[in-house]
Length: 229
Image 1: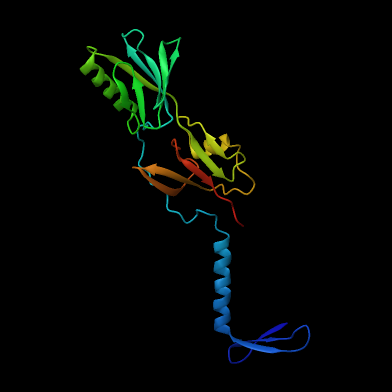
Image 2 (image 1 turned 135 degrees about the horizontal axis):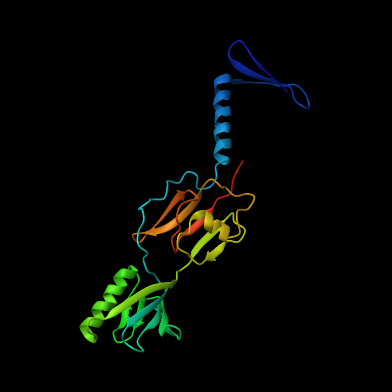
């Protein structure tokens, strides 16, 4: 097929497999058509999530307890009352430290000796410690000494172009690149310049684009997009 530009500014297409034909279109229309084709080609090459805004950065913040966290609570000087607790769960005794591990339950509470259930979800470790101390002081114990520490954090989740997607235990100082390594590294199709994180901020799910150096939080959902050429 031959394409010619005639003196009037029109493109003339000539020729076919079975015979001859002539078709004429405006050169300006042809330029617009090619521009649309180029735009669609570039858009198709963009990785999923590349148009998302950056994830809001609220800077360093204390760890907030949630369902599934495993805690160890020490009630110093009160023999036989220390325990480990999971937020909302049962206690298990630790012979080495005379402490039980508690798991925060689905209701967001833990059961503490002498004072019963205490809300844990939504509090920092320091706030939970203060709450337990005040409840003990108002009920049974004079000047109680309480220690609270997180034994096991709730997990984060990673999906997309990693070799072993799924949920993994959170660890302090974890960032996106470390999370990718934990999940077996990138696949050959992965977009390695950024990732997408969905995170609950002030009770609302927020999704945004992040760099691989971005810190990860428990309950984060990390997605590694596919790279398009």
